[in-house]
Length: 152
Image (tube, rainbow, N blue to C red; front, top):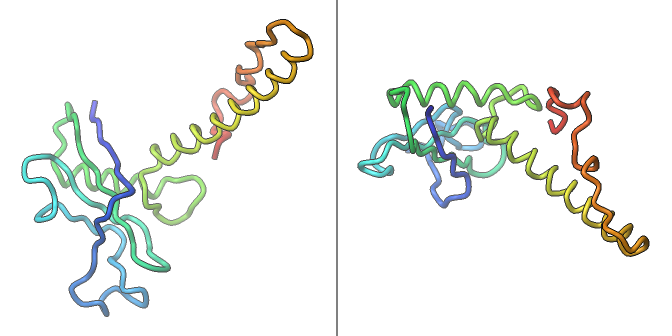
């Protein structure tokens, strides 16, 4: 098991030494990794800017390794994370955040919406019938969707 935390909303921004090197936007190129100087001196962490910055400043994601039983080297893990950024189903270009985290966020968002609708539905039907209107089948996933990434 290798456990890596991805931190997206931080105040660290990466800039090129020569602004003209970054093309029309002046952003760092995709695949830029920072694993020295601005990282923690004893922790296994790095910043990766994996996406193309079209407008404004590209925001790198900070990856912090909490547990690594696979004994990845820094370069191996950085390449793995960067390569995974090309596998997001909605995009043909690399995305800013590693796709398993993206997918988890999409599932959680969809789950919150379903839960809110279920609570509202149950409160309406419970008020009219007087008995408990909890229906366990309302929360179950249709068999045709069990092995499909419907949230993408």
